[in-house]
Every structure is written in C-alpha cells, then in structure tokens.
Image (tube, rainbow, N blue to C red; front, top):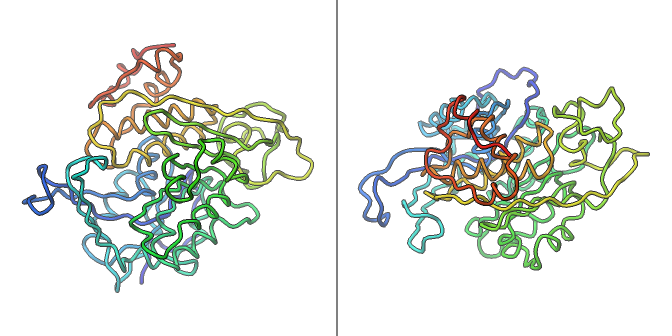
Length: 398
C-alpha cells in the first residue's frame, strides 16, 4: 500500500471529508439495466461529494480514503482533485479494487430504479484507525463523516468510533447519518449510527431515516431528544423543508476544539482575542463547553424547501450538507445555513449527476436573504446556477 502524499505534516483546511467514493456508471438512455447498451462514467461518494461541492464554493477541502491501485482509482483521485480538493492523503491499495456501481436513469423514488453495487472487499472497506493518516484527517476545521463508512466493515466502524470519540482539540465533527439499508444486511444493527451521531457536533438526519434506522417517530423534537449531546441536529423533512435544533442550553464562549475556525463573530460575549475564531453562532455548535462558560437557551430554526423542477435526486442530501457547512464556516445564522443547504441541494436536483456547479455566492446570498413570501414562491429549474456575476447582481432582493 502506498500513499499519494509526501508524508509531510498536513496543512489545516476548512473541511476534511473521509469516506468511500466509487466510479459510477450512468446509463446512456432510460431502461432496465439489462437493456441499457452503454453507460457514461462518473464519480459518486457521499463524503467526496461534500468535499467537491465545498471546494467549488471556494473553501479549502481534503478527501481522505483508500482506492485500488487500478485505473478506476486513478480516475477517482484525478476527478475529485480536479474540483480543487486535496487528494494527497488518499492511499492506494494494491490488493483490493476500487468500488464501482451502476444505476438506471430513473430517480431513486421510481419503483423501476435499479442500483448494482460492486463494492464488497473494496479498498475503502479496509480503512481502519491504523490504515489512514489520522493527523491528516484531523487537520481540518471541520471533519465531515457519514454513516455509510460505518457500514462498510468492522475496521471502518472502528475508525468511525475513533474519530467521533471525545478528545482534546478535535475538529468540529459533522455527521450525516446516511442510512443505507442495503449496506447493513441481515443481522447487522444500524443502532450503531445513533451512537456515532451522539458523538458528533453537527448531525444531519432525515425524518424518514430516523424512523427506518432507529424506529424513532414523532418528528424533529423526538429525534432531538434521542440525540441530546450534539450541539446542533439538522432534521431533513423532504419536500417540507428542514429544521435545525440547537442543544437546549448553548455555549456563550468558544469551545477549545473550535479554535481557528473562520467565521463572522456573532457577538455574544467572546473575548476580543477569540472573536475571529468563532464559527456560526458563537461556535456553539460543538463539543462540551469550557468550565465556567455561561449558558443561554437557543431557539430552533426552520426553512421550507424550495420548489424545484427535479431532474434527479441523487446527491441532493450531500449538497444540502455542503451548503449548510459552507454557511456555517462563513458564520451565518441558522436560518441562512438552512437556506444555503436548500440552494446547494437545488443545484444538484436540477442536474442528472451527483455533482454540479454551485450557484455563484452573490446569487446564493441574495436568494437566501429573500423574505419568507418570496422564498416560498421561488421556483428553480435546470440551468438556474449558470448565472454569471452580473446576473447575480440582478437577482431578486428582499
């Protein structure tokens, strides 16, 4: 096994994303997999999707994983690197292949939708605490993980437990539950995802997957009760929208683990020397507070979903997480973070692949600042992100 990097101490980046990516084969035309004569090659992976979207939005990102020492591994590293993502800590495995999968052209919600995965025994399934560069993984202001990795192998689950365990000065942990029933199989319990989520700082979870994975019903408040530890739980409700639920009592000073995080200070009592190290609402999205910090109650934030002319839903959840994290790194309020998540998701929903170009930041900021009525009547279709800077300046204002 070899690494693509030089072994030097890793630079700190905005976001590190760890997880498996696969070469994706998209059909040249609609139909059953048995009938499709040819496929177009692409890339897919929840965590690398987030890294690519954030890099395209102007953030520094790193993807950490393992791929085979094969042509498909070459393609993944080159394609993800082309987005501006640091891929120097991706390791190559000479004895295990890069995972691939095929899917039909129909949307996942379509009863005729088919996916054929060839990932058993993949290079990424051999990730472990000893098999990745933990210094490179932790050298991010935010570390983004997902429940998919935990399902790949016992070694991958051990790695996830290591990364979500409490430790001094760890990065802010972002965890997307991403429950994939087909990966868990008979006799394997997705309850471990609940334990991992409870070790994170920001959790993304769908209302439907909380019920499917953990039999939790009753809506966002009930999900929040099942996840008391994270500083922030974002519950996605499909076409209805999303809710961000902070911890019942919030920090009014900076956790040690969030030092160095960029973002606009929210002015709730930070010492001046620490103010520029805030992220989001005073850095209160993270790990347990320092001794002596005051606590204040924080309300939940909600945002309706946008009306979108959907082309395909694949990758929309990853795009939502990327938009939310981008706004978090910029220190925006909770409602704005949710809206930026919806806007990034809309960019993916209006294209056929997992990845697309995000909206220009001036345009996204203007749309995110619309009043409630304008936001709820806004409708986006294919091509809406192609606006240049001049068009962005002409976007609707609140």
